Length: 114
Image (tube, rainbow, N blue to C red):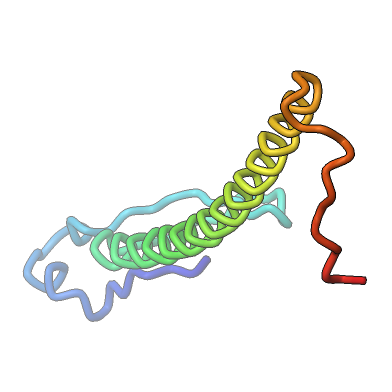
């Protein structure tokens, strides 16, 4: 993370005779790799724009992942529908055989795969 404040060229600081620019802020920041905190000197409007860009990129990535998951869910639901349909058809055949309405000796059409 780098400083975003450029106090030498800040037009607001030039307008004020004393003190710092009203947009100037200092924050302590620690990264995951380093345990020692670092003082970051920022211009609030610039840092805000950088943070908005970072959030936009994260939201865009999340939308892409959501679209991929939606496609996977659609494929899964189609597969479950096929399985449920085959199960219900098989269950109906078994119940018809048990009731005697469908006899085992009824010839069936030859399998086209053989």
